Every structure is written in structure tokens, then in C-alpha cells.
Image (cartoon, rainbow, N blue to C red; front, side):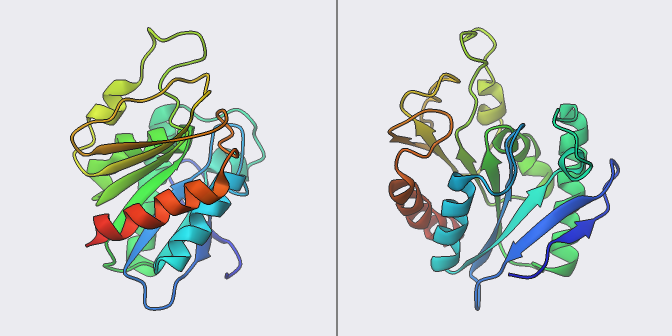
Length: 201
């Protein structure tokens, strides 16, 4: 893995951690959760699984995290920064590789909202926060429904943020545990490794 690289965005520099695979069949770009970083255990497990499946991975730190702020930026700023990083990666590091985007929690929401604009071939959602805890009426299901490429959601069975439903091109894999998604990292890795080649094919 190379040293993380700064990437300019409209809302300050983001940071990209590249994990290239030899002769990659595609690339996976993942964002972090609202209060966490790219070292979250589920992101690490997904990165390793993707690399072993012949897929290069870029982990993206949003500008607010790079700047040392704990509270996430507004959604439109997250989306704009994410799109700028994807553009940079296509131009410099990933070229014309088929691209799957995703992330954990808030990062998964960003990837869903921007899937069409970034030309994603698929979206990987780790612990998608379907609604705030105890507020099922505040559903974010429209963000998932708007994605028209294959989606894999890996969700903790006891996640207080809810359980997203399956859909025509949306697969939901349930794992033991909560929103942290650390109850079965081996199972998470297997789900990711099995899904990526099908999408890239």
C-alpha cells in the first residue's frame, strides 16, 4: 500500500488510501462512517476480501475528517467531495477499470446518492443506516431505491438503524451483531468476495 494521497475537492482536501491488486479486474472505492475512519474493522475486512478477489481498493477520508472535525459535513458537501475524488481516481489511479463504490453507514449513503453521477457499476453498503434509531418513519429507503445498479448490503441482525429490504437488484446479507458489523468479519469478507466478481463480470 502506498502512502495516503491528498485529493483536492470543493470542500477541502480528502485523503485516499490505495490498496492496489495485481492485474485488477476492477476497483472498489469505499467511504467511512459519520464518526469513524477508514480503519473500521468491516472496511478493513472488505478491503482484504476485494484485493484477494483481484479488485483494487481506494479508501476515502472525507475532508471534514482530514481537517480533524468529528461532526460530518452536510450531505451535499459529502457528495460533492466524493464525486471529486472519484473523478481524480479515474483520471490518475484507476483509469478505465470498472468501478464499484460503497462504504460503511454514512459512506454507503453517499455512494448510493452519487451512484449514477459517478458511473458506478455497483454499490457495496456496509451497515446501511435505514433510519435513525427508534425513528423508522425517517426512512432513507429512497436513497437505496434510486440506485439502478446491483447493490450488496451487509447488515447486522440487531442493527438499531434498521434492516433494509431486498430488491430486484439489491441483495441483503445478514450478519450477527449491531451497526458496528464486527460479529462475523469472515462472513462479511466471504459475502464481498462472492459478490464483486459477479458484478464486474
